[in-house]
Image 1 (cartoon, helix red, strand yellow):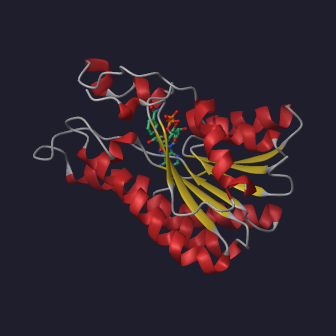
Image 2 (cartoon, rainbow, N blue to C red):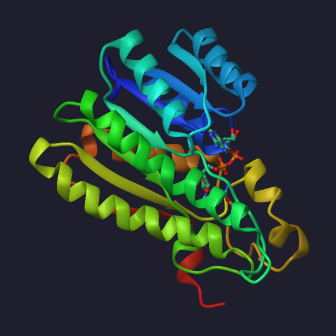
Length: 244
Ligand SMILES: NC(=O)c1ccc[n+]([C@@H]2O[C@H](COP(=O)([O-])OP(=O)(O)OC[C@H]3O[C@@H](n4cnc5c(N)ncnc54)[C@H](O)[C@@H]3O)[C@@H](O)[C@H]2O)c1
């Protein structure tokens, strides 16, 4: 029960990797704040946790919006008193060549993916004590990418740099900050990717399950990883190890 008496905020908790993380943290004793743009899916995750005897609340939030993030933090603190774990999982993929992509789409990608990490770090940390942890969700696109994905790939590369730098700032407070970089994972985001649909991005390696990622996220969020901070754990089933 690695998350007993711990309050865990998970963004994107309504689907895929975020949902699996919510379910695992709750099964290990955590009080889970399921935050998602889609309230219905957040409520479904919280409902599944309650049905299994766990503790969770669902909160609707656009994590690219500072006020919305501050409201999630305030609700978590009002309900449970403090925050022990933040998993920044929610993300957006917008596609298009740089010459054509709308400015609004480029900056929306940065704001939801990277801005959310900034907002939860800035406003969450005031309520987090020694032993707390952040886990940010990056992607293999931080290292290798396909055409028309510059906005998303840039946001993921920046998340890893943010993770290293914020980890240093948090070291004196014994708050750890790490990231995971998933490979291909069987979620709606993977199958909605136009490059995957068209075959431009080939899924030659193994495809992971959301639980393959939640186990890595829970490890980094737990005291089992007490000597790990500033790191990004590649969780891709070996996809990047192979030369194309
Ligand atoms: N699935 C993959 O193959 C893969 C690969 C690499 C990285 N990732 C990363 O894993 C994370 C989770 O993705 P997933 O595959 O589980 O996707 P998913 O589509 O199953 O879930 C994403 C969730 O985020 C929510 N969301 C989107 N925008 C939001 C916003 N502005 N505010 C709040 N919630 C928002 C969605 O409603 C959804 O519930 C993302 O950071 C993604 O970039 C996924």
